[in-house]
Image (tube, rainbow, N blue to C red; front, side, top):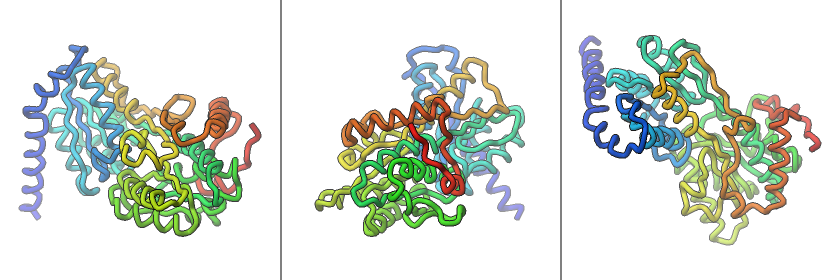
Length: 366
């Protein structure tokens, strides 16, 4: 056991030694302004989806890269292949001198608690969950609000009155996408929402599938084919890289003459995966890039506050729909989306965030 522990410690030290070494001068050559940021080091550990998931982690990475351009911060991201990597990656980033260390994703909650508790004089930020610690900024989103708008589009565009949802892992953070989507469909097409809504308030509906992964593209392909085979003609995903497999299945069927559509998440996926733009109705934008950039800027400006919980919804312009939505979604549908957007911002109704909540959800009149 002692030998194993020593090897683990040495490995972490090796990672920490190499993380920022040699990368600062290269990245600082891209800075355009903000001399104050030159001495600031930002570290980021992804969840299992990796930096190039074309979705969640990539959005977080994009925000820090904006900070590089504006302030010249020194930045090092590390990728987590599995959950066992989370704590060692965060630990290594701190030991490499990171002034702010990001944990991307709700699955990193316990690892963040452990590392932030160990290094109480260091700054941390976590996305998609809340860690109650004086040196951690917690950043969450009202994904259910943006997903509601995807539901409005799906409910109006379906021809079969069957739509589906693919999630990464069946946890509360992803359930918000699922039930917000179901509520949006229910608002405009109750018949199409039936397969999305839980029968008992606990288990997912019949047209809801979880991949138990955020990176398995083959699983996304299989689940999409299954849902299309069950009669769905529109599928929305909140599953990181798994969604790429869904897009592939959609395009194959579309090329074969089937009238099917896919919906993206986190970033404008008609842009991040342009080879599938022709089958993407819209994407739910979750502005993780804004969140990571803002936290990095706070560190540069000396204004970072640990122990704070920041939540982004429609009212805060933290979620929304992709700018490219008008390519495949008709204007009358987008006009309806805008009406619901304004109603939610005005507090005329609250979008449910749990399976039990969507069962009880009463369709608002707007």
